[in-house]
Figure (cartoon, rainbow, N blue to C red):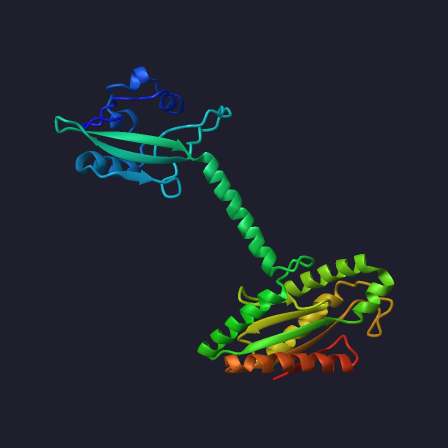
Length: 297
């Protein structure tokens, strides 16, 4: 409790324990002089308004994490500065019969609340990532791609830029699983996903696992010839993995087929046609013997 001149009238045991200032030293001392410059500016403004104008105030731990120099009871490791307690502060004006005004300051240790908020936020972020991430390969999943494909179409339509869509399929993957087992199949899927991800050029490029052994990639601003070159880089990145595939009819190692379609001045309505064209290009790559890239525009 403070009087209108900010002198301390009441200092309970909790305050003495966490401020490390005894009641004997605190009582009748000037609160601001005792703790300046350790007091947060927001607390000083609120305190002045409460005593001068009789305005109640509340400082939440979210906006004013540690306005007072208060500390927890855990010992501070040698050589480290003590860490202030997270606090919630309520200031209440109390008018006296003689016309003077006091201010009651109630402080709550908000450390546990802050910890819970951090934990919940962390779990929320994990859940968000899980919703849009393929659990096996770690790249984006089909849901993420479908949502962001729509946004990319809108942006390309506004800016008049091109979009290149790549459909990627691991050649003879069923035969790989049958021969080597699903454990090795999962391992290869992860390696292929990482190889494809290494070819992303900008933060707006999207790679997603679209099906069992099928991946899809979206890039903007490419000319058709540039998109074809990127398709070759994708194919070569997987070839360099040198993963044996004894049952492949396209070679002796794991390979991919790539179909890519590039469209200029695309609109939202063109999205379905772009997808169908890239899928048709992939089909042509498979008919042509696999382990190859077919690019169309």
